[in-house]
Figure 1 (tube, rainbow, N blue to C red):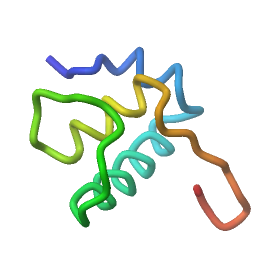
Figure 2 (tube, rainbow, N blue to C red):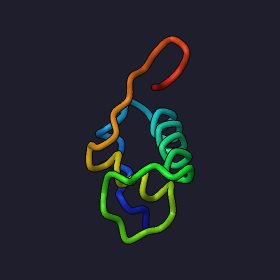
Figure 3 (cartoon, rainbow, N blue to C red):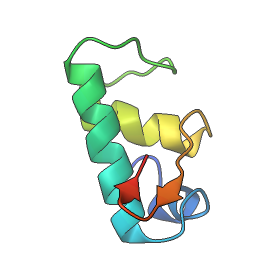
Length: 68
């Protein structure tokens, strides 16, 4: 079972591609040592990134060149 649930995550983004890119970018930042924005039981950067997105701590802006 995916935690947080996919339907919860999809309410925060416009498509699955955006979710994948946003989670990957944030997970990379976490791996580089950036502070996490939520308390998590998991130590996995991707899971933490998805929890941050689900809780609305991560926002994005779509530009002509990609996602910021």
